[in-house]
Amino acid sequence: MDAPAEFGDLVERFDHIAVAVHDIGAILPLVELLGGRFRNGGDSRNGFRWAQWHLPGGAKIEFLQPLDPEDADHFLNRFLAANGEGLHHVTFKVRSVTEAAERARARGYRVVGLNLDRPYWREMFLHPKSAHGILIQMAEWTDRPDPGRTIEDVIGA
Image 1 (cartoon, rainbow, N blue to C red):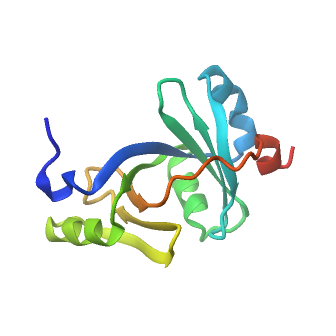
Image 2: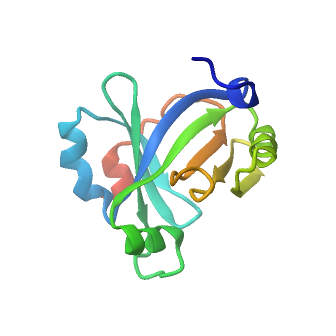
């Protein structure tokens, strides 16, 4: 079945799922069990650490960890307090975040977190209350080779 015209020409692919955790280092045995191959990661200027793996068959999984577990106002700490560790969002790569946001709003979806500040990463989210309980990230970026970091570089092990 083809995607509806509203988004079919904007969505390039489903890219990954993101999972909120307290400690990325603690999930390494699980990722190994799943056959994960470390892709990339680092600390975000938004107060969290992320790490992403390729999984067999082409899927990707990303883990998000708050940098300051005592910051009760940080979105990840609020999420972890309310839900515990688990699925945080799903990410779709789109050709134009601004166009996706316009089309989503026109269809009645609540768009949050629209960020166009960085030319190399532009994003927005569909709020889960308007998207059947799923936080959906739509992001626009240019695919680049993995930078050659190791998971040890990311988590400081």
